[in-house]
Length: 167
Image (cartoon, rainbow, N blue to C red; front, side, top):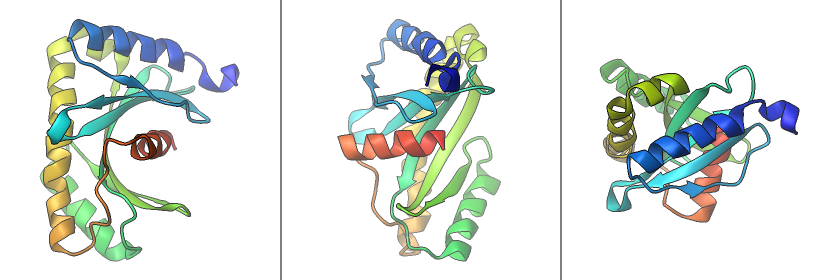
């Protein structure tokens, strides 16, 4: 298992030290088969998962927020909504994660860990911005009656988001 993870645990430990310096609280999440992660909650404004996968990406950090889980399996409509959002706000792209266990829409950004350590204010801004931007991105899905269920700060949803952020 260690070979699959590479430096991912060490990279996540670097992120945790940075979060500690920024005085942000986080929760260790169960490892996925190919990655490690933590959850960061902002109370009413949502949460995100910060994850690191094994090589060759074990020096990059993924920040992922759930837009909707178990969306209707209407690929054309879901992808159209994802594309519209991403055209308007390309720095926070969203995508369809389709799996046999259900279709979800996720927002995910990816940065080298060294950048986050070198520019902590940038990291803080991204971490704090992701949940509210994800909540806004959910609105068109609700309006189109294809929002599925919202992600919630529960063990089941954080584990689901962790797994999907690394696959």
